[in-house]
Image (cartoon, rainbow, N blue to C red):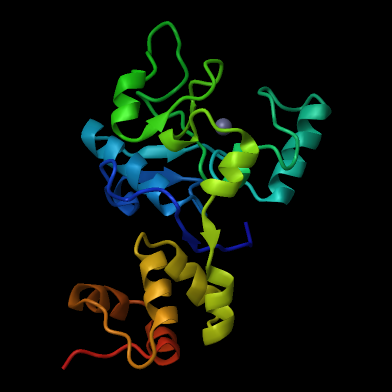
Length: 222
Ligand SMILES: [Zn+2]
């Protein structure tokens, strides 16, 4: 996937437990809504597992979805695929996972109880797709309503342009759960950017640090 997004989520960060997705969520998770990732991480942490998002089971850009649709129409796909523009995966909110205990119901492995999923701010919208879950806020809403009210807002492109960041640097930042906060903080203020000591210590170890520090005018701690 070549497109890189940094999203500002429209879901509540405080309504349900959150954890660090870099520790508890793996697989095809690029470009998912940051709050959705945090909720999945909290659920995984509670179960002591790492959730794996299946290939193409997270965010799907329009071209990804077109490709899946054509494969489905050609009979080359085992599961169904939504038409372009109608997949909830295109809204960066839906996650497909086949990691136990989240995988599809079989004779030996139950799907995680709905009540447990709900406690973590997630739900299964389709009884025929037990591997597919979404944030609970999508319940009762049409696709158009979800798109208008809940799909995250893209803030990465404007950020990259304004500060002239290299693609590689943007890609690096976009993997972090604090990326949306960093982008907002930088774009809303003038002058040196103050980050926590812990964050700076972490960033310093990467080759992107000089580019980041200069272009974002990050204040070094004395
Ligand atoms: Zn799905």
